[in-house]
Image (tube, rainbow, N blue to C red; front, side):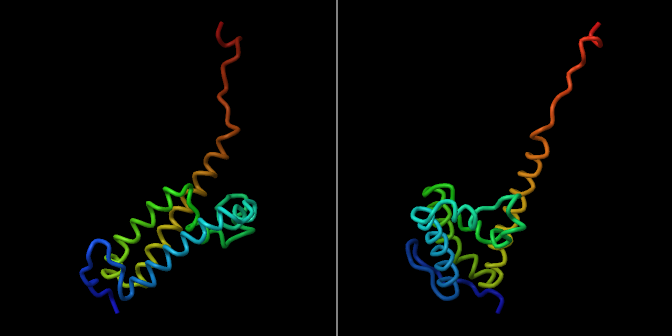
Length: 138
C-alpha cells in the first residue's frame, strides 16, 4: 500500500516495520562494500564498484554497484547517519518500493551526471587556445 505514516520513534530508536529491512539493508550494503574496499584487491573493486566512461559498456552492473562506494570513511558515516535518521520517515511517507525507487533514481542520476562530466572533461582535455600568429600582430 501507499506509505503509511511511520510510527513515532525516539532519536536513537531502530527503524521499525518496512523501514527496518530497507534502511538496514542499504546501510549494510554500504558498509559491506566499504569494508570490501579495505581488504579486497583494489583493481577488482575499481573494476566492479566504480563508474567509468571507458568501462561502463563492458561492465554495465557498475551503473548500480557504484552507489555503494564511498570516497572515505567519513563519507560513508555521513551517508549512513543520514539514511538512519531520515530513511524511516521517508519509507513511512512513500512506502518501501517508492523509497527504493527514489534511492535508485538518485544513484542513477548521480552516475549519469558523473559520466556526462567525465565526457565533457575528456572532450575538452585536448582543446587548445589558438594564439594569433606574430604576422597578425603587426
